[in-house]
Image 1 (cartoon, one colour):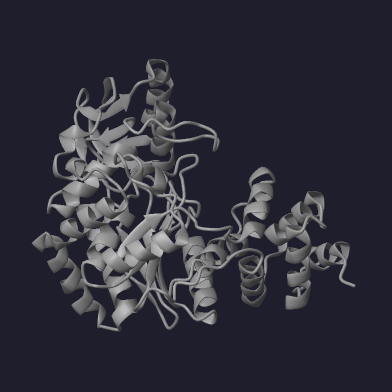
Image 2 (cartoon, one colour; image 1 turned 180 degrees about the vertical axis):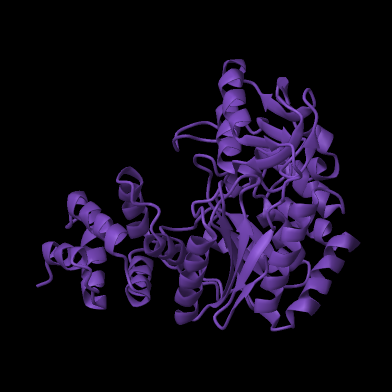
Length: 442
């Protein structure tokens, strides 16, 4: 008989657990036979002693089998998904699925809601009136078959052991462990049934992984786990020292998505989406990555990707008039200008601070029970590397919570550092990680 006490003791001593021990632990925890106290002790032991790649892979698969798995075999062709480790202003999923689906490649996209400083893709989707994201599996598959893509909440109970374990990690300061993060993300991605997965691993002040080294280790672990379980994998390590694009907040970000799909919008958001989309096409078709870059750029510039976005949103019940006329989106009652306090270059931004300020204005959640104001958020006017004069408008707050403005402004301004010397802008993409190689791009 395998005892949880012995598993904790073994991991506390830095020894590797067997697959049998990990399976028994996750099975007992899922069934409620292993108490939270012991599972918390296990998480802390892992935090300090780590796990081998073999252990991490075994933990991932044990959590996959703790609940439902999704069979997408009813959808013809190669199915490719993308997962981001979370950031501020990260609205790439809408653009990616539109570009890739316009090339005839299936994109069954299951996403989550926002919590804390990171925004949620589902919340952003619901900023479009009428959009339905809670779909039964058969309807989800039908929309993917008909349009090429669908964006929905998780169907069924995927990796319930991960949900229980994450709740414990969240209150025991054991979230930021590479093995536990990798197993958490990949258990849900493998259970979701896609054939290929492109990972967008964020690094920097607004990411869970603050250093490039930790981000690289996480990317390598997840790529290896996915490959070992029959998925084609690639990962980009991308910057999250600076928010992606200029808009933070749900409806504001959807408007920025529409701008990019119509050939305008922020350059950083556009370039990131083109590179992620090229990697998705590469996994699906085995076409050389440079040719894939040309294909996705053509789809974006020709308007085909925007047409596909309209088709997908219509299939999910969305009012597509808003996509053709963004002035229809309701605006927040208060627009408050944030003034640059000094003259100089913006040397650094703390993206996490910007995201938290947006939450305070009503655009995000501090707890899962919080109600989001889709109109709220921040529109940046300058970012890292830009020169500003004292008195220039640094950003505009959009909110209906007048009593939150002062504290949000204080936090937001603390997220900026200024210098008299021209500042370096962080690279957009640091590295590309595949099963065979690590290409440092910075």
